[in-house]
Length: 182
Image (spheres, rainbow, N blue to C red):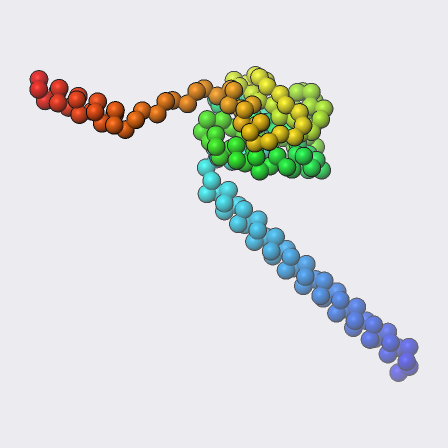
């Protein structure tokens, strides 16, 4: 064999080695991503639906937001919007804090541009608050968890006052004594 054919054979082995290394690395990375996605799915399944940030599209917006029996805070966002990504954690905290009293929904404007147009969303992120299917509040730009909480809490019914346990026990005891005395 000539030198030229030997060099070609060696470079072919080197190329095959690199391709194998990249393939193995890609498989390892996809396995890690799959494991992370699986862990996230398990966490989401363990969290009650009321304590999660929901996604809405043009097809589900009416059902998820407008027909909701609770006040709904809606975040209009896009994947390329950095301030939108910064709102993910505060919105998740808000969903947990107001679980059962309010709903937190995100709408991707790239997938649901008609919904964004209907509500005149011209800047991202835009936060809208709905109550009884009606738009009651609007905020544009980045916001802290406290800002979001203030927007939403203005639309919530006041929380029932906590009755002290001692007062409840005294009432129950007095009612029992009165019933026994009859």
